[in-house]
Image 1 (cartoon, one colour):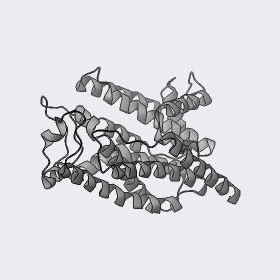
Image 2: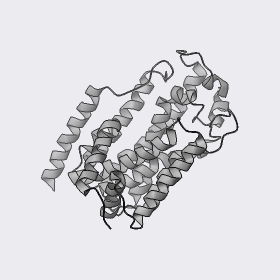
Image 3: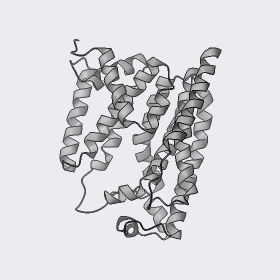
Image 4: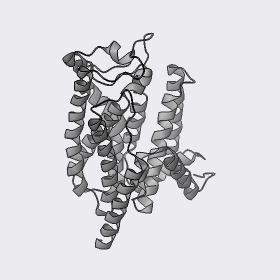
Length: 303
């Protein structure tokens, strides 16, 4: 098969996408050795493209689904030996071969990004009835990413797979907490309806609140319940670290540290995610990255 772009050019394009878009993820990427860093950036670029196709509100839901399906079909053609000049496809094909990443995981990843494109009846909001339902969504959009990443990081103990799945859940629950207000503006509520009922919070209160209104006591309790679930899954992240190849552990540590710090900031704000959007300051990210680089140096010396 021929291609109109070199592998190095393809990886460079993916690194540029990751540097521009990845935010929290990118700080972990740079703590990896080059080959693993290239592969992670390629997977991120693939994930970013799938997300962008699903979230492009210039198109209707149906149009977005058609465009995403066409893009996935083009990727599958490349996997079967088709020619491509798409830098993301070129890089991801190499990464999947180099690190034995099951192609089915990438199919699941795309399935996760298109879950929000299911047909909607009028203005009916996107919701999840139970935490089990939400877990299924989180698995597709976050745990699958973790299962791909550990193939690149390297591991030998199968226990790493369940721990990577649960680490992805921790990250996605953190994202959900941070983005409650933003998601509501897009007619989406990822907090399980059973949790809303338990805490006496109406769906309408989340979807149609006055701008700048802080959370009520009931809403804080609702969000704190999700926070406790996230904390329990961060324990899996700590258990995962020693199962990853030594030279990759610093990168995973950086990623876990930044995401966990984000959750702690939400907790310290008493779950006020409506009047401010939680974030980890650049200085704190750089401090975490500095520790990651130190750990990376020690890991390389001990190899």
